Amino acid sequence: MTPNAKWTRLNEDYSQESGNGWFQHSVGSWEFDEVSNQLRIITENGLDDPFDGFSISWNEDQMIWKRIEEGMEVVVILKRIDELPLTYANQMLGLWKPEQATGEGPFFGEDLNESDYLFIRWDGKFVVGTDEGKTYGVYNVHAHKPEVELIPYGEMDRIFWSIDFLDDGVKITLLNSEEKVTRTFKRIKKFPK
Image 1 (spheres, one colour):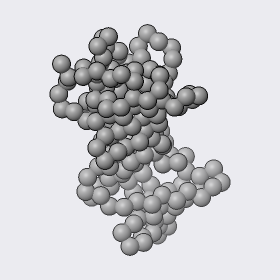
Image 2 (spheres, one colour):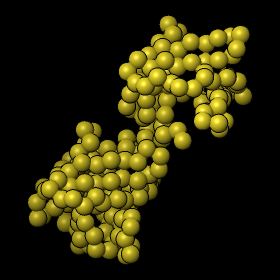
Image 3 (cartoon, helix red, strand yellow):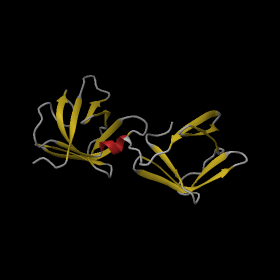
């Protein structure tokens, strides 16, 4: 499966960069054999590709890469972009104020306070602020689906939430819970006092 918001930039000088969302994770080069219609991506800072190159075709505004991997046909459909796509993690970045809390669970009770917030930092860390103090930890956003794992420092419990992006905010729902536990947030630009 291709991870969320995957991109590849093929430059005229035969260099290439690849990443997901705002995160570039690969650099290297590319080569195209016109006789065999094979595109090979060479990564300098990653693992060697154990498979043959991709055969290339076009369909209107799409570029289609095909090849066999472990006996199965893989098809990658690309479209030209002008801006890097957003991953679920990119969309979660920033400062959030809880607007509604349903069910008893971690982080914020059903009675919310003006000082409550959730700060998703760019460096993989989060901060939850409440009247009772701050909780710090790290987070992981799933590469293939809208889910976030919050891991508070000093605790062994990992807390998994599904993510629903709304027009004016985000709603997270606790996974693996017998009771429905949700938290709905609105983006804010300043920390509450």
